[in-house]
Length: 439
Ligand code: GUN
Ligand code: ZN
Image 1 (spheres, protein in one colour):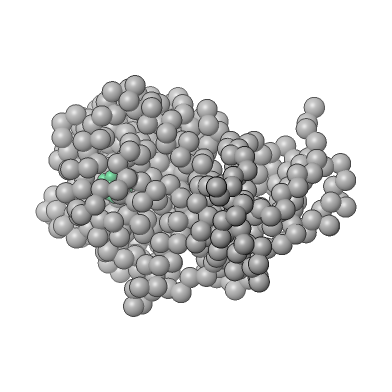
Image 2 (cartoon, helix red, strand yellow):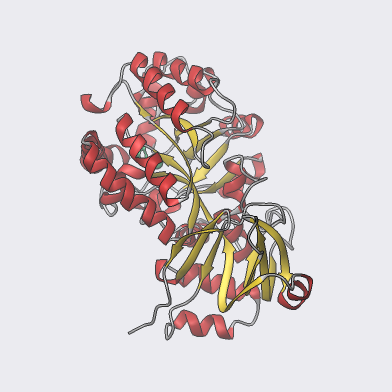
């Protein structure tokens, strides 16, 4: 027997159209509703209309709250959950001094399990329902992540992080081990319970050609596999990649030579890509994970949104924890806005652009646009209920907002984890925080 549909009454905001292509991308219903049946969106619109059309539905009166699509994080490192906030270092020093020592601790499976649990809880508490996650260099730690994600009900893609040079020895695998261990994980998790496998070389600098060949073989093993890595993040990194692969005309060309740039590829950063690399990214259908807080924290550079748009390269947001500042994709959207504000040729982003980048753009980057990212009927009911804390300035701002755009902007600027009241994936509650008050 199927459960009765539910009607969630609140202000509903989503971007079923691309605001980089059309001026009316934001759909907003101030006294709105989402009807959910069998874990899917059955209808979205004005409350009065939907209440009349669905008299059988179980009504949840969430007035004073806003319902947004679940947030989508396209680049986040689970082993770096506990090292957010390392200041004062550029990428390669930060890796050596902050990230890699913590990543080595993932070799202890008990420790990795504890971090995996913290990680999935942090995602859910911040309203993230879907994420492409950099796993660990150790197979049992990646297993711990997949198990924690399954138990939490999150939609996670991840994989064993592969390296066979440059990094400290405990973080390296031989290409043969990389192949065997990745295949085992893939067989256990890919395509099950909303989990997918992503072939994950750390970056070209820590991969031999033999390892990149293994990645190519792995990526063809099963339909629907993803590929993720880093690209053009830091100027010294790029110089070092050029020295390591002297035959390659560009950083992207290293991956491309092995067939690793395609519609299922997500490259983090791409701050310093050439026009030829941008053209090739667009042609291949690959997506870029834009991680503005990490880019500022590590002093890596500022993302040229205009050049990506002009070249037709897809991009969405990544928090890049632990180089980034935390798990909130809304905060990442705000940081994205601020970086474009300070860049002389920055792109002027509206609240609708930011919501799109935090939701539907992420679904597209991960090949999930038929499934999640907005409230088009038929899609999975993946949503966040934002309820400002009683007595907080955000509560007053939401109550007084003159337009849906202003309301959305206030939420993006101010709604942190304390405002995430409930989170659902496939209609199922994965986070229920209860009402909170400013004391
Ligand atoms: N490049 C290679 N590894 C990493 C990492 O962990 N974080 C970031 N930001 N860049 C990387
Ligand atoms: Zn990263």
